[in-house]
Image (tube, rainbow, N blue to C red; front, top):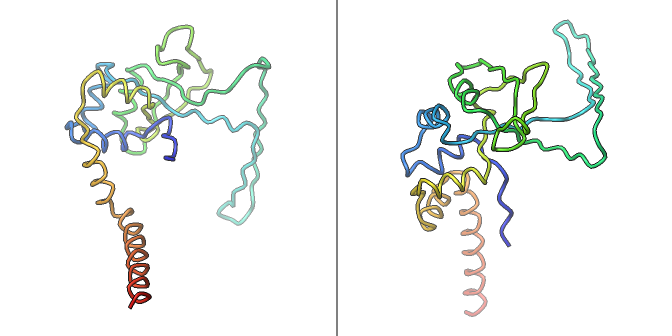
Length: 187
């Protein structure tokens, strides 16, 4: 049985998947500007936590953050939040090391007033923080009939990946060892 597919993808993964359709980072910026593709972010909610760090003079500094929440008993945290196209565009246009403030995120891809969540303190994001959900990826591919390649091409790409070459070498070595043992046994 295959492992379940994940819920969201980084823009690097999306560009790699859509490279046969000639989609690159500049194209993704254009999609944000036109609101053609709905971007999301993963909003961490780690609650109360403690951070220890060593200062340059050797002192150890501990910072404790305590979170108080008033929520209903049936509340479930949804970490995926959606962005308005203008916020996604601003994040994609950020320079290296620059983080863009976003004060309203949405709990649904409709990004309407009912699903909006405003924050007193804005959240800051970089281009590497942007995601595309699996539902949005599938919708986009279907609506625009993207040519992402056949199953054979996808398998070939997987086999061509340097990280997967190590696994393939191990497997082929094991198969050769077993085949050699069988030949030696029946001689």
